[in-house]
Length: 406
Picture 1 (tube, rainbow, N blue to C red):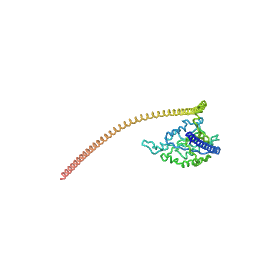
Picture 2 (tube, one colour; picture 1 turned 90 degrees about the vertical axis):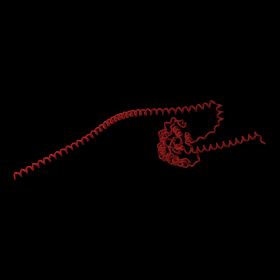
Picture 3 (cartoon, one colour; picture 1 turned 60 degrees about the horizontal axis):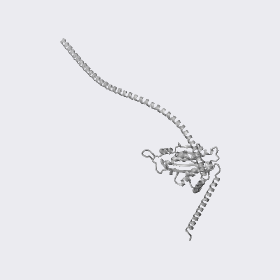
């Protein structure tokens, strides 16, 4: 019968054998993968040819959008970026403030609103879609005049305009890394609502169709699509972005023995400290370069701020003039109001006088009518008296004639 110690030794041997088999399998797999990558690199080394690459991810919170904005504007540490090439980056569309661009587009185009007027957004809605457009590194090689790069940028902008239109609120070119690439941010509003599924699809087949569409648009540049329906893992933008600093080879993760590293540090601490010091020195040099770039940006911002201050000062003077004109107009308006009130009072007085004149006129007419009637009566009486006198005279004459005749 085997003793307890023998059983333990046997179990340990079996575990070591299993670990050895696993390690040998991993090493073989790594070797095959590296061979495949090398073969692919050799086949695609020809300058001006390569693969059209598109990576897409969804941003559902403004914190994610703000983080993406800091990254594309180089407001945070980016190990892959060369500080001496930061000036080659370009803002092709948008204001440079990604969060503000997204908010403004949402405020302008979302139709469903709260009572206070703010756009109504679902909690799980995709606020923004981020795409990285690039090509494999060999495409940008041997291009001293950047002619190929300019044509590639023009083709990307034509594709973006045709595919996304105004929904693409920001386009930024990064040319401070190994491979030039574009960051495109799209607000997926369809018919006044956020609907990323309608705009970019939600299934792998629809994403594959979008890859086909993009590859077809890039064919005139000599770029081709990757292997369709391959079993290759689709990296996220974050993972893909970390790979841009490498060549076509994707470095496999190396096995690290923490105990061995600790022993090395204990045996030769000076070498470890020197490596750490060298790494820190590189980091300091990079930070100094980035600080220099930021200082230049600050100086540019200060210059722009002075220009803005001058414009504001000019605007203040114009506003002061406008205020003086308004004050003059107000004074003139007050004078006109006083004149208007005076005219109203005079008009009231004239109206009263006209009423009195009308009253006097009626009284005069009545008096004249009475005088006329009196004159008529007097004339009638006088005529009557004259008639009577004439009659008497007539009778008197007739009587006299009769007497003489007798």
